[in-house]
Image 1: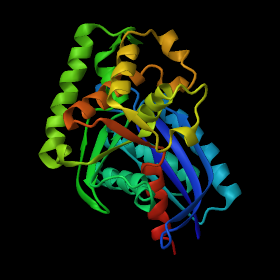
Image 2: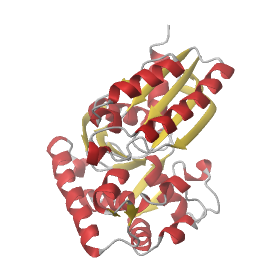
Image 3: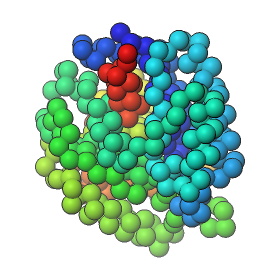
Image 4: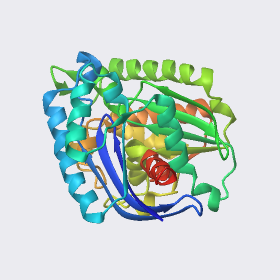
Length: 317
């Protein structure tokens, strides 16, 4: 077993997993898993730059994670940065800050690499006993982008497109710095048009309709699952490998579309950092299910973060 630390820094959140992993046996023992909403991608779609306050929030989280990594004695650390830092003109500031704090350089990976790591993290366990039909379509709805990956035991095709819950919210639901609640019909129509155009792009590379099982990852999907399950608090064990029907996703999306900030914040399992962006994320999930014809989504708590951990363990030493 190799003790590894995996960090996934996306547009909306930064997450840490410290685990003992053995790629040969497929065993992984989780020691610490945590997440902070830092909104690194704040304003990137509009300005093309990482905001100073967003960088400072991210660096504060990195300092906390550095202490955890040191305490648990990880042998290898891998830090992967995704959509926001790919898009920003001043990504060098971000790279230097992370290197100073954690002693490792963040790998600003491509959308295709992001997709492959998501697939690895989400499906390594499924192969061991969930008896789900293959091929899988893994959909990772992030803050700035959404990854689509089709594969059996290995990736067949992957595509990353620029529809994420933060990007769609900032592009269509923010007026004068404030999220419009509930969203107007025109704004929702514009979001759906962007999503449909992005799905057309994804479908050029990834055969979305050929998958037998839809596997959904990341905060939008797990939050929708928590709502569907009626959880009074967020419970990863209950959410992991739950199956949420198309009808449930459709009903929840409709409810979110008609809700105010206060009503969404009052949902028991809702993370405060997702209150403003969950509606856009749910629209992405619903559109994916419509496009693929999926009658249910299998929800995975294991995603790109676990894929990063596996990859770090595979290259240890």
